[in-house]
Length: 368
Image (tube, rainbow, N blue to C red):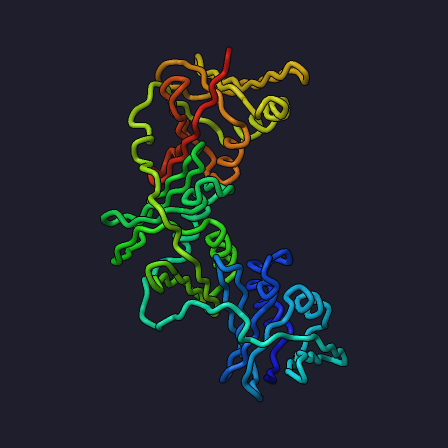
């Protein structure tokens, strides 16, 4: 193998692909990049067996071939180089890197040891608007589970229902739902690992020039995302996603409209006093006001009262403050609507201008 390309292009591709490579991977080969020089492209691939990322860069290829090389060492060295042309060649079991007077030789491993990648059969996939797709993911991803107790909940369910595409994520304590018209003709009902979709969002936001993302099922268990010069492959999660429709609130007895920034500041302040009490904060709604309070005997107590547009009866409900803060950090609008029906039913957070988004949080039972 012998290839030459710009340091900036090489480092950009390494940074994208390196996000799925862990230095603590149990299989040593998974701590490596797969580098392949073929025709006029230099391809860098990384995988953690759940997610694989492949990124191409234009390069001058003098000799085709491929090697596996330790990811962290390669990134650290390429980062240290000045801008300019980088030459990479395989010699006697090492990858030799030369650029602007800098030279290094890193022992490499045969590319045959790298795990096999999903085969892209080049058939046309579903073209979907990138901006809408990424925005929908950003609004739901944070609600997915991070522990493996129920693997299906570590994913985001994406389902085509008539003209709309539903994006759903839940960890059993909260749920985010976004409905989007992606003008997609293909049927779709899959659950994709949230960890993969975080990478799709990260790469998609940094990738310019393409207005669409191509989404394609490789087989019954694999899915591919195609964003410009980058391909992301992931397994589709097995199992039946919970019937989320049955827990969506159908009515409310109390509705309030709040200024988001004032609400966020109040929750942040109150949550300081809830840290040693399972992060429990209480909402009390009455007479055009929302009072948010926390009381931990060993720490102290705190309350903040906000003006609010109240529709319906007053009431009390308690939440985990961390869940409320997570929602607010991903909610882009200046005002929001909160709905509840008693202290034991889920509370619903909505936009006042866009009914395509819903976030619900399960309440916490309190003794007082």
